[in-house]
Length: 90
Image (cartoon, rainbow, N blue to C red):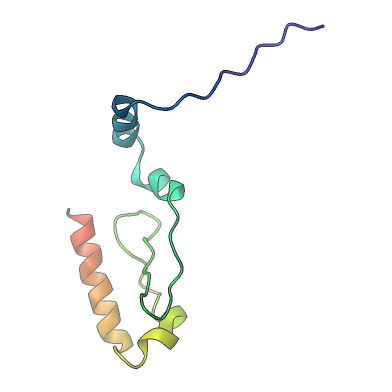
């Protein structure tokens, strides 16, 4: 029988380790670890852009069935743009 290295048991992270990981992981990788829900009639989800420093600006068309009776595309795009600026500088 070969002497293979045994797999290390996975242990729970301590709060200190979790804080360090959160500090070191770039936003882009953190985003991949969370589940982003789909839009539905009661809420429209605007996904983050690739740099994770703002939001995608092309979401109106894919959510038009939920938004068309409430807000125009130009109003929606303006709100998303402003939200992106807030996210970028926070």
